[in-house]
Image (cartoon, rainbow, N blue to C red; front, side):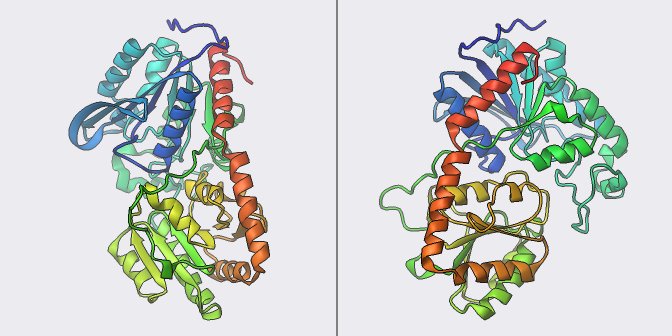
Length: 422
């Protein structure tokens, strides 16, 4: 039986369990989890991160500190050959139990569990441990995390036609059984945390109870700056008021094809328009962007220390995703940097953009509407665009405050310790 202390105002001991973490991995979910851990640590709580993954290319184990955050990284080579293993991996459960025995947390907080299995949920149930889970994607509902069919059309979590899609994930079929098992194993989760309301809505459509979810916005630190003397990420001739930045994976699901069509339409009306691409992807898609001409600047993978430079050099950031994004860091970070965003009206993106004040929204897949939004932005008087930049900074400071984020986490943790709703 769990022996955690009473939910008083004292500092807490929090064990985070996730599949990937810094320093080896640097995606949006990893940055979000790190910010939570660092913020909790700064607030006086004790935090340890167990980063464990069963599907690594080679085995390894590392204990390190990432800016004072205690990290235990475990990479296992355990190809899952049936749906039982991906639901509950005994070896991973053993690692979690040993971590709990060593660290003695008050609360277990999971993040991405693809590659981990639901072992943290099973262990928490067995020990009676308070458990909360942050949802970064749709893995509890869908094997590819995105509710995306092979033809890139979206499916509904209220249906189960993606058994056809699941033939490529044959050891995870049948889908209805997987969903039922996952919901049952998720019963120990006291609260599911989501940065967006949309992700909650999708899980409720998939059979989860709405009262078990709460929205906690990202807590974001100011973007890093490059070290003194470092070469710039983009040359001065690529910077201008009519520059549009795309930051992220160059992928069809991220709307790159829509962006390419929109850029051609917008560039025909705005000769000075430039498109800055900060990210990598398949050669076919990168070549598609290069074929648009020398007004497209391909930066490749930009280090985190230079991302602020990319936003600062753009008059507008574009988020043309065609999938159910949760609360994309690209949008949040662009706003914090003072650069308005034009985003697709899909997933959690509309929750982050105040139309006409911090950016613009358009219907996903509509390249003409995206082009119109880009052209309309640069047609606005410079004074209005400067006012938008100030509004973006103010919005970012207000909505993505790390202390406010930590205060919400504390509220969720203490409610889980008390076994109550908040």
